[in-house]
Image (cartoon, rainbow, N blue to C red; front, side):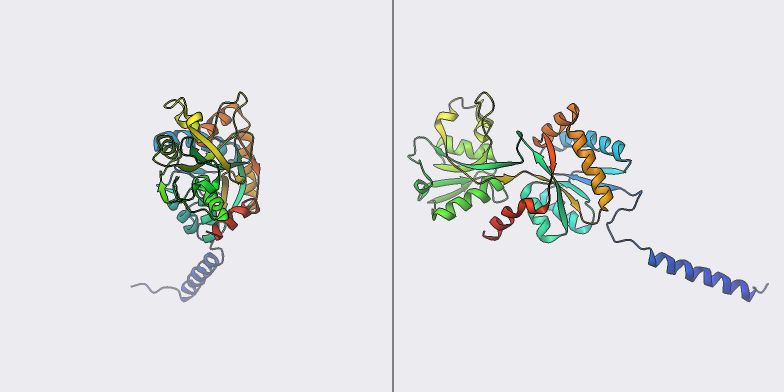
Amino acid sequence: MKSQNPISIIIFTSLVLFSCSNTTENKTVPGAPEKHSVIRFYFAPSLTKPLLNDKADELIHFLGKETNLHIEPVIPRDHETMIHDFGSGKAHIGMMNTLSFIAAVNKYDVNARLKSVKYGETSYRGQIIANADKNVNTIEDIAGKRFAFTNRNSTSGYLYPAKILKAKGVKPGEILYGKEHDSVVEMVYNGTADAGATYYSEPGPNGQIRDARALLLHKYPDIQEKVKIIDLTEPIPNDPLVFSNELPEDLVSQICQAMIKFSKTAEGKKLLTALYGTEGFVKCTNEDYQAMFEAIEKE
């Protein structure tokens, strides 16, 4: 058997050691996308998956073309999965609802960089509604009555209205949960609940209602007379576009600019409205949501 040159063995060993050492020094932080790797953009699962897939693909195509980045759309099973994936490094960008964002900030290092604009506003309100025949005219009248929230994960349908009841020292006789905003409106309309909490939007230019009661206007034409508004919550900041802190600032800036540009196109406005009722975006920071942090801390 032919013997190997000792010098060759030494040179080969040195190269291997140098290569291993160099690889260790350049190791990246897990989850942080490199220049040519995939950036995962998560969409809040508020629509049926086929419809969401279709709309998400259009937006992602525009962003990829505008930024030359490889961006991949992801539709998580639920809001909790999206939050978890920001923590594990899988998610880099997310169109989140406000409560999901607060939960993500409390657990992981994420930043709100754009805030959605709806009906020309960057905030909205919750409303407390009542059945017109139940003699509920003020917040104090809710004491001892049947009151319906949407669900405990809703900002306008639970968190902020509950804050009003607590501040007034009012305790309903029975708490009900309708899950969705239209369900709560129907419960109040039918008298299953005496009062309830849903989202509020100001009437349109011609006076047409745009709050949660409008969801059932086709079914109950007299809903505006049968279900009245007795109070509004303080302003609630609109849903944010959230970024993982692992994304470099130059990429974040690029994507934000592209999102704003997309929202100003006719097709972009139409798509974003279909997705989340969003008309456009304005820049923001986590500080814009400080009142929500405080409201949750007092829960």
